Image (tube, rainbow, N blue to C red; front, side):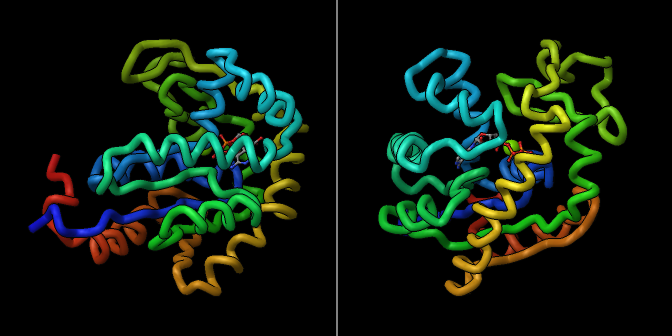
Length: 226
Ligand code: ATP
Ligand code: MG
């Protein structure tokens, strides 16, 4: 019977550094969902020096959004590669009204999880953040340090401070978020699929997100029992 259920399609939103990556990693740990992070995909394109990566890099390093057409092509092509029936969670896309409209033309979105974290908390976090680029795993020198400074816990590979986590670019990214991404909340609120979670710590927000997902992903096959 489980083959008859329709796949669940979700989006996770929130300002840069709001914990989307961390919450997403807990979601895929506990539920049967594929996580697609636009930032991680772009960084992989940049690392492989693809045409798309070279184009996107100009925007990323200055805290601007990459062009909608580039992003829509990148994400939709990734979604099309997934086996049909895959539950997915988009992180970092859509990030503009144009992207949201293009996505809704092609795919049904069931719900949007919005992480509502205050701006001063975010500035503090981003400046102390270290990232394992190949996986997107993040650490914070203040509250979530790696076991060994500068080293990823899982792979033993080096961590880096993302170029765009430097303070000037952080301010620009927050501005971009307010002008271009914040209006999306209204877009999804009108469609009655927006679920917002407020807090200053991921550990406070996560139990509420998890409780909500348990009401949606009710099929035991959609839960993981690790
Ligand atoms: P976090 O890593 O904490 O989620 P973030 O959301 O700012 O922070 P990423 O999602 O990794 O960072 O994105 C990094 C950069 O990649 C953005 O600042 C932007 O330049 C570009 N980018 C990512 N997703 C999109 C998108 N959907 N549209 C346009 N540009 C994007
Ligand atoms: Mg991210």
